[in-house]
Length: 161
Image (cartoon, rainbow, N blue to C red; front, side):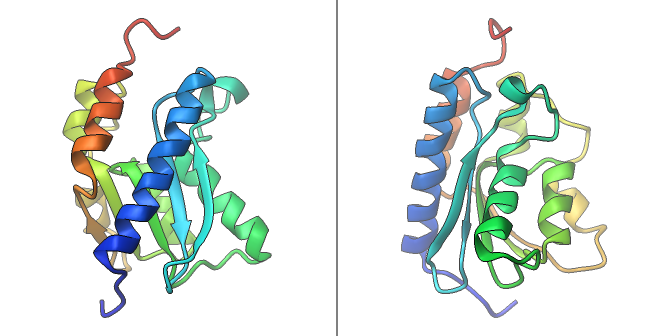
């Protein structure tokens, strides 16, 4: 896949996702954030997980960011855009990104850390699932990985109602 953003753009996008994830945690949400970035590196949308406050298990940060970007751009095709997520996307979020035309995804913490923090998974990692898709997905791990891992481990699921 020839399209790429600079390391600086990816890190800035992840910083935005981390900041909004922290805002979500302060509101009682799970510690996940995501950003949608244009092919030129312009921030389009950023969102945190809202599954707890909305009682909606599909209100993950990635899904929320994709919905916000589509609304802002008044289109449902985000081909060429990037998704930056504080954690490796779950199967639902990876599928939502692919359906929106997103083929470039950067993430911070991998599914091992997500599981360690108590947020489980469905038994398949984003990287494993991406190999099964008919379209090619460029998944890049460990963008600001230490910061994303720290966010998850500071906000482990245990003790959170």
